[in-house]
Amino acid sequence: MKNIFVNPIFWEGDHICIIDQTKLPVELVYEGCRDISSVWRAVKKLKVRGAPLIGIAAAMGFVLGLRRSKVKTWPGLLQEARKISRYLASARPTAVNLFWALGRMVRVVEAHEGEDKKRLLLFLKKEADAILSEDIRMCFQMSRHAACLVKNGDSLLTVCNAGGLATSGYGTALGVFYRAHEEGKSIKVYACETRPLLQGARLTTWELLHNKIDVTLICDNMAADLMRLGRIDAVFVGADRIAANGDFANKIGTYSLAVLAYYHKIPFYCVAPSSTLDLSLGSGKEIPIEQRDPLEVTSFYFKKPIAPTGVHVFNPAFDITPASFISAIITEKGLIRKPFGRNLRRLHGRLSQK
Ligand code: MRU
Image (cartoon, rainbow, N blue to C red; front, side, top):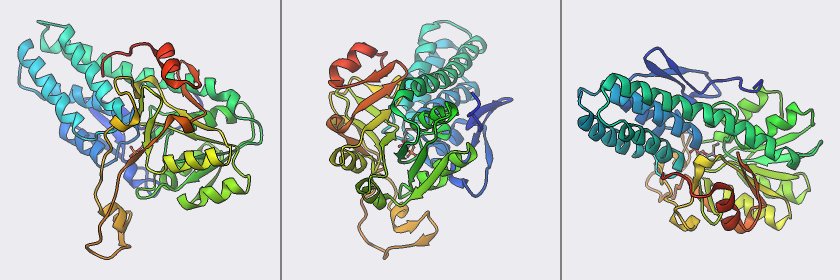
């Protein structure tokens, strides 16, 4: 637990407190979310981001939403719960953890037919707390399963931020690095800056520096050269949604790293909890990809314009990495190798409905 140095989300009295990640690394600002629309906005604007964390935030936001509702009877509350779920789900389309968490919350309401509002809210708060604590446990378990993949002296590459800030505090891909560090292995991490919103430059380096891990920032277009120079031993990334055949969505730029790693014969690992699995989708082609504001591309972090006004922009927030480029997927249940379709099903069976 010693590497949970920051708490990206927590209850403070009757409201939720989040770190506004858009302000990092310049300022560490905590913001209170007192109603459901402030939670929706925080997710939409990436104040709260990373697949597991947006699931946790949605579950907590759900509690706020139902608490504020004026409805008192169970049938009315069920209707309201479904409405709240649809609203929070509309904040971002790709990370399945959001829908997975909201599905769990709605099922709590469904399972307590006739319950009065006060008791229902207790059950819902308990479920949101369980989603948070399960994520902590899953991150630790993944880091243990992946420990054998990191050797003393390795140089490791990552993209975006799949760390404590993207989860309940420890991280998926970065959790593997924390674990290696805790085991006394000397590792060096290269962090891709991750244009356009710079989660690698702003968040991953911040986290790793705080945890005293040797980190070097690179621009996204420098990864190929590092690999050609033989300076990368393995690539570890997180995921936003993993389809039944092992294809997965993650931050834009992940696919190009996977192709590069494959070409240079470097192992490429995807680290994600089962809340990121969507076995209802046959392949990555079915994963909805979020398209974001052109301003993210035409300006440097919304400040300085870096392109002429009116230029066409393509700005998908995620891309799909085909299963064929992945060496292994690591979930809390273990290390999964090819064929991913069969082995994901074998380890995770039929997961609960998203
Ligand atoms: O747009 P973001 O910052 O929410 O994207 C986050 C990522 O792509 C992460 O790699 C992914 O959610 C895994 S986080 C453990």
